[in-house]
Image (tube, rainbow, N blue to C red):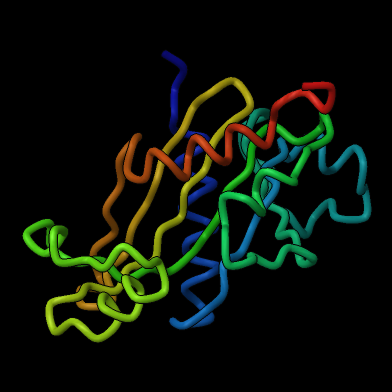
Length: 172
């Protein structure tokens, strides 16, 4: 398996960037490119972007991205050019402990309202990223414990799968 450190380092930069704007933000999408490639395409950025390892990744926020009600459907409309090595998304969600799973209403809107009003809900920001070759990682910060940053390869597997799908062939 490939070394995940460059992806994790880039995701930590994304998380710091997003965290600097506080909570209650919309979903934010980022293209991940090698810093070397970025500086070849945009040489005026030299000196403004740190140049570390040759394969280091730089995140470029996609300002035109706006998540719809169905985030997975929205991600399904995205295709990246070959110069993009990966992508990441930062989003906030509310979760309940698993013991309340059987109490969730079937209707998605009613379920969202149930979670939002539940006294044991936990608000969390996740930053999930993938590389074209299949590497994945996720970071999470709880609003109740903002000093701790959690991380795992399969933190949010469905979201990582949807991000990987954005690298499918345009012909498929």
